[in-house]
Structures are given as structure tokens and as C-alpha cells.
Image (tube, rainbow, N blue to C red; front, side):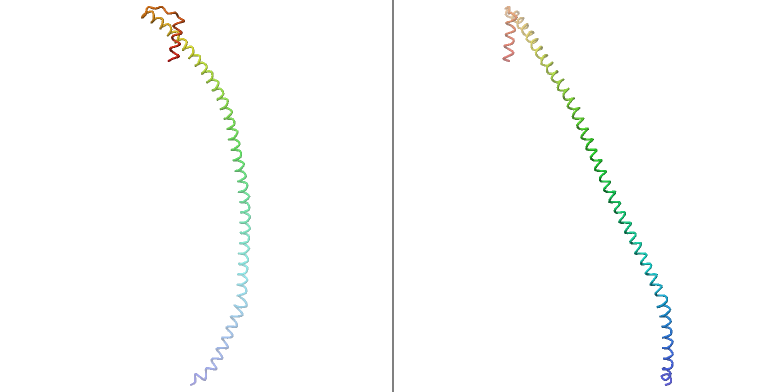
Length: 164
């Protein structure tokens, strides 16, 4: 079989060219291109890491500014609430003073009105007694044909009112 005898000659030639091609591929790609690609990937990773670090620093600075703003806002809110509470307190004190003054005036007027009512009541009671005494004298004169003195009629009317 002639093919088996030629196998060694063709095989050794193929192995030779295979080693040459793999050698070229190794040196061109492995030694030339791969390091450049790895350097580019490394630079890209470094740039990404630097960008992430800068973003984190910016975020931390923003968080610090936000926290300072929140503290200032809370302090302003507390100050505003204190001012409102003071205003309410002073307004309430002013209202209480006005109410006390008005209540005093009302109490004075009530006392004056009660005194006037009592005076009117006493005047009305004495007038009623006088009218009743006169009516009793007139009735006694008309019905019994008896003349009653004004003092006796007044005493009788006062006694009837007291029992009454």
C-alpha cells in the first residue's frame, strides 16, 4: 500500500506547517495583540473605577450637604414654631387681659343693674302697698261703710303680703 508509505512524508510536512502557523498565531496574537487588548481593558477598568470613586465622592458630598440642609431646615422649623408659640401666648395674654377688663365692666354694669332692679322692686312694692292700702280703704268704705285709717290699711296690707 503506497498510501501508508507516504504517510510519514506527508504527515511530517503537515506537522511542520502546523507548528509554523501556530507559532505565528502565538507570536502575532498572543504576544502582540492580546497584551494591547489587556492593557485597553485594564485602562477601561481603571477609568470605570475612577469614575465610580468620583461618583461615590460626589454622592457623599451631596449626602453631607443634604444632611446640613436638613439640620438647618429643622432648626428653622423649630424657630418658626417657637415664634408661633410666643405669638399665640402673647395674643392669649392680651385676650385674657381684654376679657378681664370687659368682664369687670360687665360685672360693674350687672351690679348697677341689680341695684336698679332692687330699687325698682322696692319702689314697686311700696307703690303696690300704697295702692293696695288705698284699695282696701275704698273697699271697706264701699262694702262695710267703715272708715279705715291709712296707717291701719297699710299695716293690714303688709301683714297680708308677709303671710302670703
